[in-house]
Image (cartoon, rainbow, N blue to C red; front, side, top):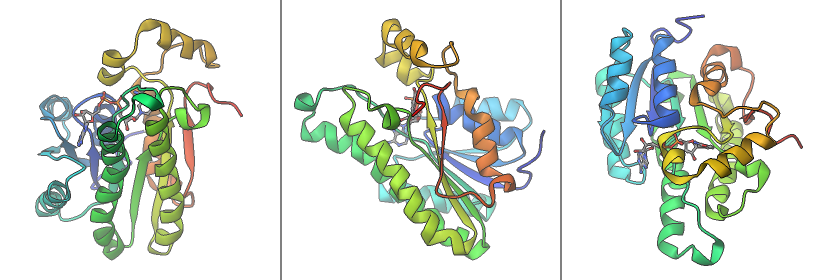
Length: 248
Ligand SMILES: NC(=O)c1ccc[n+]([C@@H]2O[C@H](COP(=O)([O-])OP(=O)(O)OC[C@H]3O[C@@H](n4cnc5c(N)ncnc54)[C@H](O)[C@@H]3O)[C@@H](O)[C@H]2O)c1
């Protein structure tokens, strides 16, 4: 299936690498014009999209900054005139036991994973309301369902974005704006490659029903479903794409 999102405009935060990069490429592959909002240059993602014949706009944007978010949304509207899709993907997952989680680390995790989701969402809702349609997808985590150790602050944010999605689903449903979540399992990305050893990653594969490491593209089906009209009557929900690791 191709061109399901022809003419649509999508913003993906954290699109320079990992899951956000794969999502941006997948959205462009279905015909969307994609805004790559990242704190680091997203040139690689832009090249992947353009080489495949798609269109993208890279904007340096720290999702914790109201100023950056406003400038990124303004740049999107100036270039494309509308916003149909927002994927709140930018996130960090430092591992630290609770007694080693100082205020600076706590605030950094909350700031990017939760406040960033709030700021980007608040910035796109007015234009979606006027258009009478919109899709917002928050990237949660399978760790919220597993209760993984060493990640209390992170897991708190990943539960919070589900709570935010449920509340906003109710608040925005009358405007034909759907707000859903994807919860990935442990997925091979630059962030995971830098932070986790083989032992931990193999341990997660053992817990999965599907016995291989998850890759970002495993979530493309869920993402494109939630971004397309196929999911118009589904909102406030979570799609857990983790190879069957969390089964309760
Ligand atoms: N990889 C996994 O196993 C996994 C599992 C569950 C959930 N997730 C979630 O998926 C999302 C992406 O994870 P990933 O593994 O691809 O991460 P990653 O570290 O590989 O890539 C994250 C991207 O976000 C960007 N970013 C970081 N801080 C930012 C900020 N303040 N503003 C804008 N961009 C910023 C980075 O520059 C990078 O391009 C995160 O929300 C993460 O919590 C990942």
